[in-house]
Image (cartoon, rainbow, N blue to C red; front, side):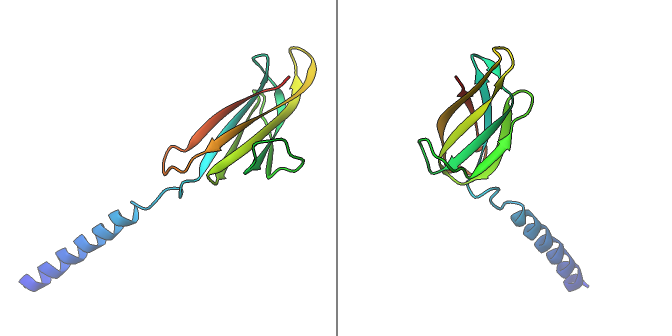
Length: 124
């Protein structure tokens, strides 16, 4: 009888231990996210196109990711490997009634948690 109780407790403890260990795995392997905000003279661009090029610090003709920004000029890019990214934005400034573009470089570091970056692209 004592052996049967010991086996049941051992099984429960083993099951709980495996469950806890499973939940302690790495979250994202160091990948990051970028929240890009496009603006001109502190005015958000209205639904800008925002492009990102991986492993680049300068102007380029091809991009790895592109996304249309929302009404406040923001686009969110996820699952980005650590590295340097070139962010390019173009769109319409409704306040100054101009089509503008701008760019900025940002480094996504290797971190396991809270690997989010906000970049403000000032377009002129």
